Length: 358
Image (cartoon, rainbow, N blue to C red):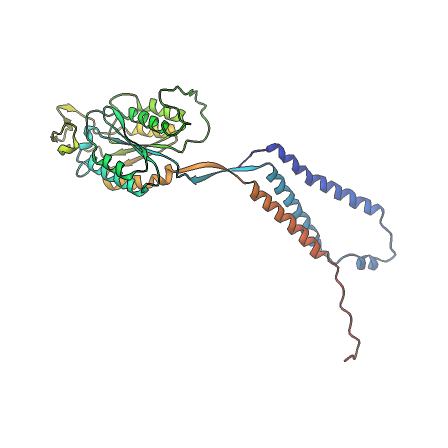
């Protein structure tokens, strides 16, 4: 919890001042006390209250003053709240290794199915953008709530050579910059001296890849650009390290030629990486305040994407608690006054009935 007006805490001095006044008043009363010859007369004159009945109202009143004094300082708390205005950019790897059959029928088909379910779960309630990357990266669908446009684009993904994870992150940053004026595009230099502070932007980047960066910008360089703009990047490593044939149908490959490869993972006679760079993916996520997930099969990938909204759409926001503190302080003060009045009320003894009366 933080205080918007910390200097207002000087109001808490009212409590010790009241205690000092009370002590001074009681001291003067003792000096001016009248001496009575009988202790019984003193006891009869005093109200019939126990010591705790005298102290409880005092301490309740004191607590009320303290809470009200804190309210004057306008306390704030950082709470986690859902943010329906947050935009998610889904960056999908469409490199040649996505034809690997270690995930049946192949990685690309399984990833497309999981992405479609991800889109359908939102049902147009949140803006989602789609970036596809292989040796290059490009924005396929700008952030939109049009589920059909997104689903059609996912169905039309085609594999190609190379894996440019860093370029995918930069393309995602630019897509967010188009709709969020607080996020500078990648062409604008943002000072990053290691002292970046403040809350994260509500928009988030999710990178789904099965390999390691082979082209373009280094992913950690791109992650630093995202960090400087307070954008979180969540990374998902998809697939296994098991050698397996790579098989894609004609409508999954750029150029329309059907490809079948052997367990060595050859694509067009050129060796391909089928093992993912989990270390880099973890560093990208950690650098930007995101998280890395590992999905070795279609089911676990679906689970990761289903659970993502509960993490990426929750934002920490400062909420002012002044009204709650003021209400609590007023309640304590009223309770103290009420108890003091009730316990100090004058009790009139009931008239005695005459003996033998009818």
